[in-house]
Image (tube, rainbow, N blue to C red; front, top):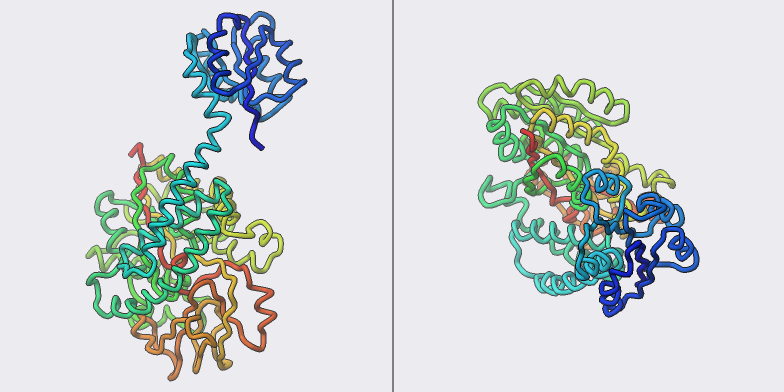
Length: 521
């Protein structure tokens, strides 16, 4: 609820400020005055005010003492200190007490107006500006629908939509958020068609004009940082969406200069495929051919057991010599505490320290199984807020602080994102089909609706190891999740509203990768 456009000005020399009071009243504010602190407290008890202007040096109660009494009555009351004192200690005391603003006399009426307007109407003014900006930009974004976009334009488009999603969510603009969601939904099908047309040719034609993919992280991002600095902290946050990255980026920006780029996850956008591609620099079919002992695709749960070894082999290939590697995976608080004890020693050594943090992926999966988590992370906005809350107290942030203290650059990225799924898509499959909800391997697989999935019959063309004859891959499009006709109601009840990954939505595929350069370094 907005605060009233009323001001209480407390100053023992209030008569000398009559012209200021009249000016504020001409601007539409009602202004009451008091020359004594105790009288002001009585007035505050009788009626609500929008803001209090308070002199520090008054007889009787000093301003800061009165400020504490005011805040005990109304914890959110904006209070502006208007005082003759230029003493640094007075300013520090006011700042420490969380005074809303601080002005040193003599002040002109415009200064007072600016501060009062910011405190009473700043949120509304910013919200109006945000609405105007989005309405104008929305028309331009909608006009690009159906246009023939290249991969660079798709990255720009998807990143901008994620930024708007965060800004509109923070501004609590439900109408504008609905318009944005409608645009995002329509674009998901366009994006799926774009990948269907181009993905196999990107792999077939090598590094000719294609986006950076998971397999390129080592050569295009990690190697240059390592050559420039001699040591790098590589951080992979499992299942981090662009909008979640936007929520934690300001906290990281307090420690580092951030150079953000973006890349496309390989398909399927799932940890066994995408993260192995990051650490190896190879597509899954190449991993199986080169390291058959490390790829048993019948058991996806074991596919990420060799990430550290794969990184060692990749760095040896792209750097032309062995590179020291320290690799750790963090699943729990205990893992994080143990890591932080070892991290200083890791960061003293040359080479690469590689860390994988699994909390967001665990949260994303866990909310489908746990009703409490589901309530806490009910939608994308809540998931973003929870991500920031976790990050503020996480071993990841502590690890970044340690890297900053030691002047070690950080390459931070993720293996895939996730999509908030609401639409069940019926598929028909034999018993051998895999159980994943956004992608499936199996014989004679088909989706009831043609546009519900991308069908891949030639697995090798998508960089995937061949399977039994007749095996094909389905990749879910839009916000769909796969259900069987025999378990339709069970799957709908369990997974509708879940955040899933493995398919071809922009939220899963287009990912951030950021080089963090310590300021003190």
